[in-house]
View 1: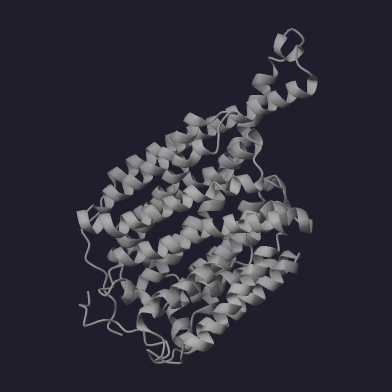
View 2 (view 1 turned 180 degrees about the vertical axis):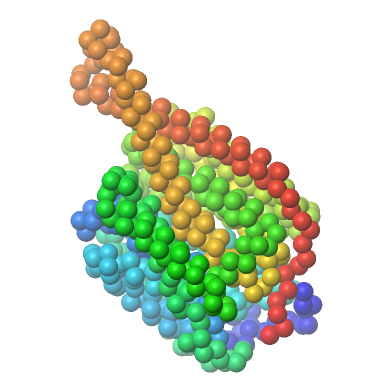
Length: 511
């Protein structure tokens, strides 16, 4: 680890910009960029209804943006050094403006998906440019144990905050209001880069064409095909549809092409030798398991708030607030408590997963037709804090165990295990599970309703059917939560049984 050699001065700002304000300027850039996505997944229903699209179409576009964000990781350093930081931020801001404009009017998936993929890539590039510039302001010793909690608090926190703002804007105006606000913020970022920043190179220029763009394209197509299968599978009845079978065949063909290319390419885009480092598989399994646990709110919680409590989009958006507070508290815990009290990675991981398990148990205990929004504050807070802790701790551990030349490749792998394929796979499994439980519940409870049952006979037909549907849905959701609790206990046992070796501090190359 490099020892501090005096106060770090951010060299990319103009001389008349006060030094204490330079780091805050870049942090403002990050907040605006993370706030501005081409497709806001919190507005899935509103956008699908307004544009006559399927809900799966909007989800496919949103997940495509996440694929673009994760798959650009191995090329971040070549892209960063291909031009100055001022040019990178300016072009990324204008590129995101163009993506927001196109995504507002595009209804063809052939246009929307590539636009969102490109938006995710340049969004991550701009975020990396900002955070890499102010890293030594956050931690002069390049301690990833302090740097990554700040990164995760911003990235995960802005997901919740932007969803909250988007729903309120859509309720007051139209769903396009979020894109209009994003365009305004991005234009402010572009203008600020021209005013406050200067052109300066901190390293020799890297030729743009030397990056492995073919490997990037092959891995991206593989993930997008898998995303198509997981997103549209339930809609097309899975393997009964030719398009799903074709997508699976395309995935297998692309995977074989990627493996064949690994044999003769000197530096593959994602080197399979990265999987050979110690504890990598443990990290990936825990990432996948937590993604599966966190798919519960996307399916079961939304079914409960919408189908049982009859919350609208505006009421449901307020549930993001305790999750946001929990994320900030989890990141603060990793930033302060872990280094101060020397909490081990195993204990921190188990504690984070236990908090997520506490969310599942808390929701089951309060789940009834009389549940209020205030009763869900504590479980949602636990969910946000636990998820932020686990993702931060596992990434810190990966940074301190995996060599630098494989670290950004491993970030891409963890990204598509967590968001690109893990989250859609978890949602698909939970949705299928809920559908099966609903079918079983209708058969079981429906057989008890006949002319001899005094309760239905004493009610109007519409009220009796509505109560029956609500009871079946509530029982099915509680059963789903129960299965997820059992799985969460299994994940805690897996984390407790995993072996975490002692690691050294992260070391950057001399250049």
